[in-house]
Length: 407
Ligand SMILES: Cc1cc2nc3c(=O)[nH]c(=O)nc-3n(C[C@H](O)[C@H](O)[C@H](O)COP(=O)(O)OP(=O)(O)OC[C@H]3O[C@@H](n4cnc5c(N)ncnc54)[C@H](O)[C@@H]3O)c2cc1C
Ligand code: SF4
Ligand code: SF4
Ligand code: SF4
Image (cartoon, rainbow, N blue to C red; front, side, top):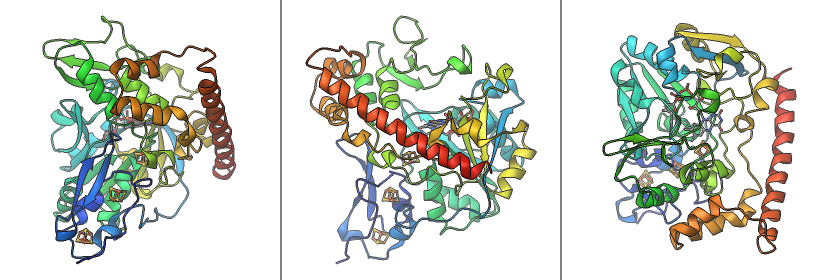
């Protein structure tokens, strides 16, 4: 009987699911654990001990990016309609249009009802489904195999996902960088547990919720972090038509607070200036140079490879050089994957308790109601201290990165 293969642990597993696709014997499968995150289950009886999964897992077998120094740009799509459907400057959509125009196929995250799925698009008319950030982890079991199949057939492929998913794809490809693959990752602040979303869907009084939009640009990008839901026959903002702002909905609060994030996201090994992907995309929140572009949205693009550079010059984009100092001050997550003190925050286990055993009232209370009383003072003071410590740690990492990268 085969010994258990070496895979990432519960603390380090990113849920990328590349190991599942690497196993030719179906001995691995994904499942959702009690904490509301996706992990991998091993089936001893089907395992032959071949080790393919360990060689694929990006945590166990990391691969190196293309040699060179990353470059930073400010960019936006020239097609305003395309850009308004995207979360930031629409760079992903412009790259996708270019790939599709050349007969290629584009992989990205889409909503299927209230769940995120990764799917392939081959027609420009279907591209909208892949646009926009979805703050929910999807299960990519089966997707890497499809990408590999297209690549082997010689089709041009644009694969877009969070950094651990892009690393999982390179794991599936044995670290090779096929010429017909353009890999695009994101600045990623991590995935919250799926439990708050499930609770929201179960309890919110909007009838059957058909789908969710995590970002909505109808009032412009600078003010766009709103959650919108579609129920059976109407599309509405929660709370009687009042747009819900960041941190004020249960689902957004779970994302914004980081307190239910999967363990790997609190120490993400993929948050580095120079990455495996050809390009990294982010919101350029800290920009002061292009204020007239803020309504429609502005992206920061980090170029990691020659192919990435060619792709942004071919696509229908406006691109300007920028500096790391300008970018990193509003986007530490590009270079700092650690939130070292959040593990010690009592709100982390309190939320797990509330979402597994507590009432909906308690769950909401933990996110919305923050009274400073004698009873809550120690909790809030300790939480505040931990976030301040995290902030100081992040400042140090950012300063160090700017000194290295801008020289
Ligand atoms: C979980 C998450 C956290 C993020 N955190 C930050 C952050 O802290 N700072 C920052 O500057 N930017 C962050 N981003 C990225 C940012 O929101 C935009 O996606 C990015 O700027 C690209 O914008 P765009 O307009 O070019 O493309 P868009 O059309 O907005 O989207 C680009 C691509 O994002 C991918 N994507 C969306 N949701 C998911 C998902 N659930 N899983 C995998 N891929 C997905 C899709 O495949 C799509 O192709 C985050 C994105 C996600 C998904
Ligand atoms: S060692 Fe081989 S057979 Fe066993 S789970 Fe890993 S890939 Fe599958
Ligand atoms: S390949 Fe991905 S899902 Fe599998 S163990 Fe490694 S990190 Fe976890
Ligand atoms: S923070 Fe890191 S580990 Fe978590 S989803 Fe993003 S890339 Fe993956």
